[in-house]
Image (cartoon, rainbow, N blue to C red; front, top):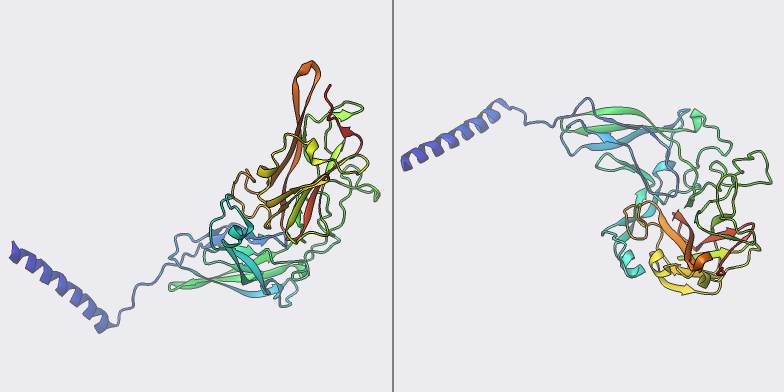
Length: 362
């Protein structure tokens, strides 16, 4: 049995030596990577909103050998002028740990991310394109305010894809960025100019405007005692997402105003879970607002948490109860699913436009 094993071993070694010897003798090339001629992207026209980290592309390697090398080449405007603003380098946040929504302080959040310099627009090793949140209207001029989209204002580039098996060129990618929208919902903002959006029911009237519409459930108005709504036809309650002055640079406030634009004391919303509503810290409740220290953007990442059940929007909900007819307790609620992308001091303001909510018992 030992002789058989020795013979097999010797035969294996001889085969290997012959193989190596043949390669040296005949100078045979090593194995090359496979590069498919069908390498492609599901989307070659990118329309990211500046100021947000956006991943794009839809790369299909068609079983090509990885890793692949990607190189953006021939960057130009539609009229042939060289284009370089997309590749301006700026500091942007990169996550080094996993955000869970369970962090207990701003320091714990900041320990999971760091700032790195990156081109504003680049391609990853995975074949995904990314526009970083450090992009701004000033660094990358967005599409024209008059809504025109001429080819000479469109950014084009080609992409070289390669491995040791060869290279191929995928031509005519397009980038047509939208100007910054620092928050969502942003239907109150003109997406071309950044100004106030017109009323969709009366778009030619410069004196009328659109509003962010919160959700409203069972809110009874006084004195008319009708249930409030917020839609295109009737806007009993509207919302604003706007910066305020006097904060520490990372504050978020929630405020409610009555029909005379006077603050309603947060204590009126007696069923609201203020501590569980926003992933913020050092909560302050005053007679006019509730304030948190927060990290931006909100939500920090697009994964479901208790603060952002759907992943893409945080959830602010104000609730209160009163005794209705028949002695039954009635709960009312309104609020907003929102996102804020630009750091700073921001407030979410709910305004009752026509009548105030009824808090008194029947």
